[in-house]
Length: 166
Image (cartoon, rainbow, N blue to C red; front, side):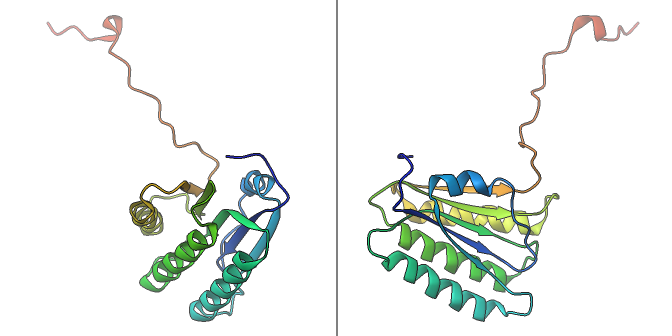
């Protein structure tokens, strides 16, 4: 990604019930002008979506500003209504980023378990990647667990540990 610049902004969308990820500061260093839109616990998905889409459009129209980082931090609440909200918000963020410069969209979850919420986030990332084609926008999925997700490789069996069958 290009060097840090004062005209770069980040937009963070935080669903009600989602925890603020510790790794988010990495992205905010890349795009220091941050807009954070958090859903109130009593706010419906429809009202929240309308507010988020309006704010993203407003940020994209700001003269001289470029949206470099978009982050959607989801709560562990699966369901078609949440899926639609995330799709609409993600597409609005991608439009705000444009295709003229490198940018990054991060879809984040809190879940420690492999569950329906995780599957929905990965499916959304896949859909967005297909739609982006050759654009210079990275789509990432992250979780708050802090674990890397890298598994140890399985090595070849060692002869001294093999049992001899007689």
